[in-house]
Image (cartoon, rainbow, N blue to C red; front, side, top):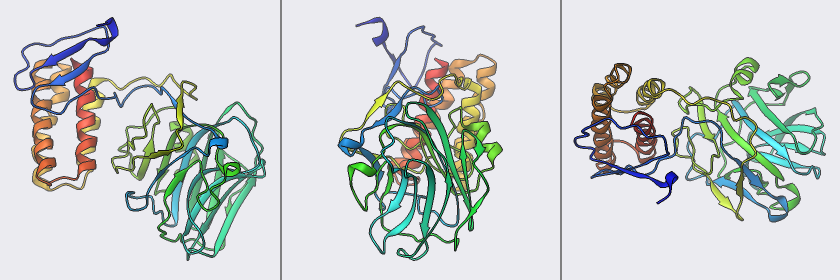
Length: 351
């Protein structure tokens, strides 16, 4: 077993001592489902690598998605690095053929950022601005729609003036939510070619200041209005808590080339407080929230006092409660998995 492959076994019923290790560890828990979790509050590590000649992309089926049927107010964000700029490249889309069209965001004619939307599944309106990117460099792109007004941003700065469509509403279609692909044409020339990272979907209109202040760091996933969030750190998991995990098509991979990597990890106390906030943000029965809080609100204090055994005990009790509620259907699978993931990451941070 190599130096980077050490496995530490912890009896989660009665942790007997606080342990610190200089090498990465996995938790193999006795009588619990805690296995090698990804630390969710870490610096950016990988980006999604899509090749348009292979028609690679990722998607969430309409029946599996939660919160991606956007209405008249939205913000879409992502980092992109074009490997080539063939003419039209799609970023985010929820659109099939006539009668099943919702919205799409793309680069058109290699020099125009565009967003179009449909209010009846057929009839559409659009907004666009002139913008000419270069290949092989990172850009942070965003589009903000509020009613009929649309604003386009690159690297945190608005491009030109606000644009206006003919109507505000967006049709609730049965189309899948796609990243890097145009399902209606399903042609390689319209698939994205290059790298994408840190994709965010909001059901609120973000300000330019909010976008600029947060584009160079990963989010916690519990921010108000965040309905889809893919860090793309080696997996396709939705970090928003909505369970919008992506399905890869035609074998897209990951690249170590990332637009930012210096975002510091949260401290254990910050992670503990974020977990408490995540619990309070869920639509859970009041008695469940109070039960979870009875354990979790002690954790930041115990960490600050360096009572690590006590902090672990409270987290273990919390994990058991979540697993019990997950098993009996008191809380949804996606909510339980998100809470367990955060608890596991926090355990790794304090052992």
